[in-house]
Image (spheres, rainbow, N blue to C red):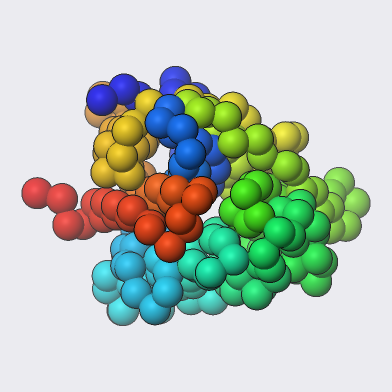
Length: 244
């Protein structure tokens, strides 16, 4: 089992991240969704496969109440006959609703996110990151706060090249205050796993802390889908609180 990439391992605190790409075995697409958290309310979450997708749910209702529930509980991944939507918030449903056979992924994201702004968590103003697989193609989007407080909406096409993926995250990677938010274009990562389980495990290990550092990992999910048969979805979820 290889590592996904040195890039993910270098991110001390990426917040939430999305990777879309293709495993080395041809004919498939891959989506990775990962959560890291610093606060007790951010840590008190898990990923659950239910109701047509992968949902973020609380592990401790009382701790979770101390945070912003609207930003902490949401569908991270939603499956549809026309494709798959993924995001770090409730905008996932709007992306899913825009999936149509043969649609352009960048157009889907641009339309679905036209009314969405960055998260209202001053002073950080966390970006909303989203992605989709549709019509045999893929795309990623970042909605972030501009230097004058304006909303910047950016969407990118993702080429599905075997063994490669593109990554967006809410934060740049350093564990700093205030947290530096993600900027620029999606970053290239390698995808070495042959299955969803292998890729989820390598991503989880890549997010492990350096010696004596705090472990910010919360959960990782990976989805593999054959492009010729998109209903045959392979899903693996790793929740830190369930690890022994």
